[in-house]
Length: 375
Ligand code: GDP
Ligand code: MN
Image 1 (cartoon, rainbow, N blue to C red):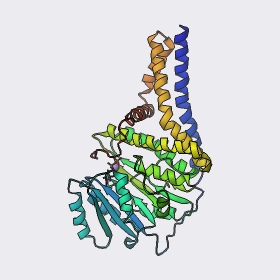
Image 2 (image 1 turned 135 degrees about the vertical axis):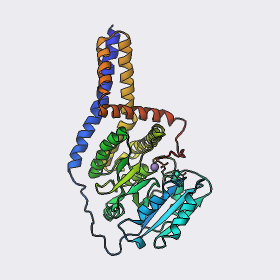
Image 3 (image 1 turned 90 degrees about the vertical axis):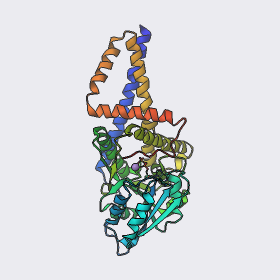
Image 4 (image 1 turned 180 degrees about the vertical axis):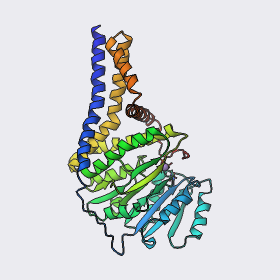
């Protein structure tokens, strides 16, 4: 009886921490959100703005590549001030043929196609492209994403600031899945809030721009962390530069309908790799990292690596005590079930489950080269 009671109390404590910790972070972040970036943004790009190398990694993107090229072509930015570098890793569909066809009809923009004979993952491909890139700004964009017409211009204008080392975009998901829209809504706010404070904990491959000299300092894109975008931004932030998601840089992301769950798990696996690596770095070299960034990353690492497990453990304890006849535990479980009717709560719980599955899956497969999921 006493033991059951104890198990019940412990379960309640774990679950409470699980919900209180992110609430505290959220309240803090909403305060940051009300401030500004603390950065001067250079809006008037001069007559000769920075030269940008736009890199598109492709693996079997025949369905979307033309749309992607048209989207870049219609950017509000002088066409002689950027180049497009497509790096393809042995696509087996018509990606390459379609690109060549497009290039023939668009002679006023410089497009290079680099082909790797074997597929060794996205980050490896990006490093290959980097060797050919001439720009001072390196901008990565996934084939299955769309920019607004001012995304390129706005991203460059933020990068003109000496303190900014990297810029990414606000994601607008194109999907009929409520759960994705809901999750993105909160996540997007956090990313902007963190950017205003110092740097976003997470970057997006739909548009991830870096100063070339900083990329060179960190030795190119990390090939042993799946989240090459977030991790590169992390390494740049740890050197003291801001890696921000400005409100006026936006992009549209396609969300898969078939294979949605394995897609979410794979992305969570990549984020877990990113946070574990940064956490390890902070433990050993903490002092050299800007204080604001340390604070963001301690919270975010906790939320992604530890907090989901408190939920699982707390839930298990409450179920055990319910099975041993604890009425309070049974009532709590019923309340929990009822709360699942609320979309926000459901979204939250689903995200915790995904993080747990992802952490376990990371033990045997890091998904550094992943299966293409149709969007
Ligand atoms: P998701 O957005 O996380 O689902 O990842 P995607 O599968 O869309 O991949 C992001 C981008 O990287 C897309 O443009 C892919 O075509 C590209 N990509 C993925 N794997 C490789 C690879 O091994 N080599 C190259 N060159 N590109 C890749
Ligand atoms: Mn994608």
